[in-house]
Image 1: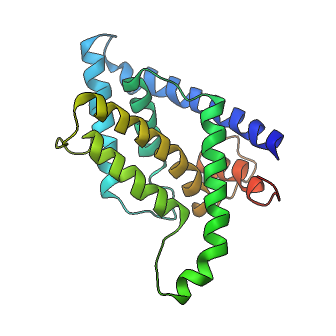
Image 2: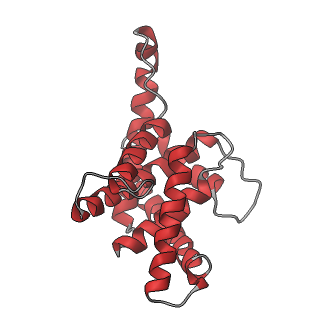
Length: 197
């Protein structure tokens, strides 16, 4: 299982590099490097954070593009990239929560608690981190350094949200070479059936 997890993490890291490169060349690249590009990145970060925070989870994959744009902008803002180890940790966490939710579903229903799906749980954490980072709204009680930490947490939760969201939206790859939400679901779903994590 550890080998399969690492293989999938490596695929996700390569996929995100292409997402980041494409976002950099198209969305952020409307102006040259410098203060204007930094402003475009910040605008994209805030716009997509607002879209995600104000949206409900759906089954159609409508949050895929805003989530990808948010992750690319946040990584650029933080001056970091997502390595294989980050994806491996996100996969481990998302799969663990998938299994945990499946095993506690009946008991939570028996006591009348609506805990929510893994994607819903990750989205709650993501939304809170985005609020603390003051990127969806301009109000935060945190200083600049702590806002950067909150933005890092939003990236952390955003990766996990992406994986759980892909699994919950379902997948139907009909021979397409697209590397989109369905591709992510097809990549991750076999790991959820493995015995060991």
